[in-house]
Length: 74
Image 1 (cartoon, rainbow, N blue to C red):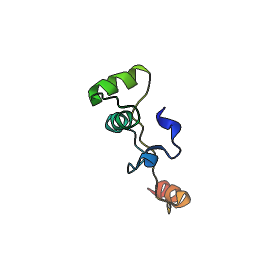
Image 2: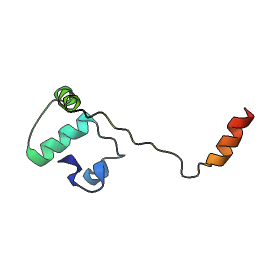
Image 3: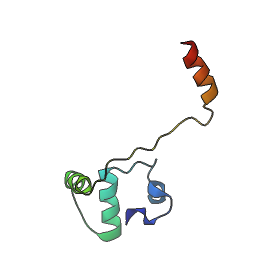
Image 4: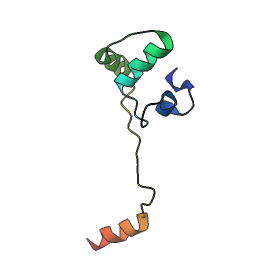
């Protein structure tokens, strides 16, 4: 299974934690020697309820309280 490696996409040396069909196709090739087109993988993954996942990223210096105050003044 693709989640078997701890660290997600980064464990496969991909930049960022996005799992795209292109990346899934590459992992299937590396791990199992299976080749699929990205369009076919997209259909397969959608058929089992998987969707493209984009992690939510926020600046580490984000100040929620300051943002709330700014929004209340606007």
